[in-house]
Image 1 (cartoon, rainbow, N blue to C red):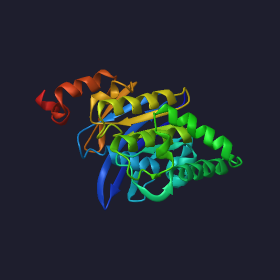
Image 2 (image 1 turned 90 degrees about the vertical axis):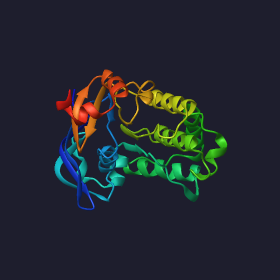
Image 3 (image 1 turned 120 degrees about the horizontal axis):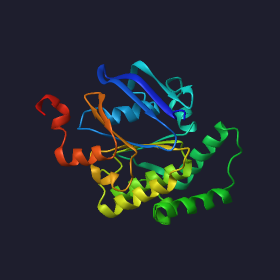
Length: 253
């Protein structure tokens, strides 16, 4: 099976400081990969580089996504090609309603694919169906994007947007951050319902508890800008029990 995305020897900097120091990672369609690691390891940098955040500079390496050079694409083109990032800290957009925001996003993607704009009726039906996946209150859809939302509502809203856009590669950057157990379960259930054989997910997290709900096929440990260990789901349990010191100082074993 061909890889959906393949990252080879990826190096990246921000403000002249090297953060990623040779990432190698391959993800096949249908797979869920978890990326774990201590603070400052480069996890969020990796997610930002994948979506084309302009503050980051790739200095070496390549990313092949669906057979094409991802680094040659603008952030908008990457989104239209099916890459989605759920932010660790979703921002508020005052004065822009969720309904208008999502309709603009969907129709921009359809235009890039050579499809006509979605009718108002079809769009509202789609919103109703996808809201139900994450128990998103219908009243929130009429408010400005994330404005006045609780932490849990913001994260549910991120997964709702993911459901609406139907990405091929979803990157969840510490989606569990700040969630209580009920919100965590609802968000995770939404992610699981969206899983298909042709889509993949990268779950970036500090904690095993999210992986109790979103079951990874493969777990990677990112430390000091490199993936230093890869194994099955049992690795996340070991990290929960032992922390990261044994990864940082393997000679201490």
